[in-house]
Length: 179
Image (cartoon, rainbow, N blue to C red; front, side):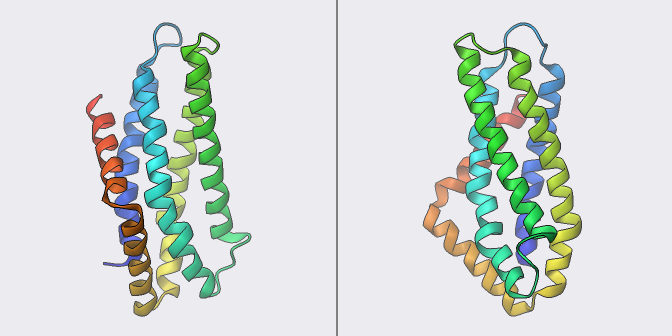
């Protein structure tokens, strides 16, 4: 298995949750009660993605690719890093807006808006990584580079503990079961 295959498999889990989010957004009326628990799970899931997935890219794959000559600034790595930050900002905004909503200081539309942006951002982001960055990386990486990147992933998972990946899978299953 190539190091990028691990990331593509994680993208499949993320993409399924994004499909669930799209359905949830479609089913959410602009007036009335909001399923706050679902959106809190989205925040938790996104934080788990950041911990389990983005850490592999940012801590292992991207450094390998920059070592092989792919520039960190500009180009696909720079774009992916910027989009990771944009996603984090949208999730922080969602979390803060959920607090405001629960206190009666935000509307359903205020909650839904960052979710729509997040959904669009991640759908495009995954497409770029799977369709552009990962194939470019595979062409640059030797078998040794791939093996070292996989070892880096494993080291990171051991450092995080198994509960991090388990949380990601559990939250995905819980959210997907709601639709």
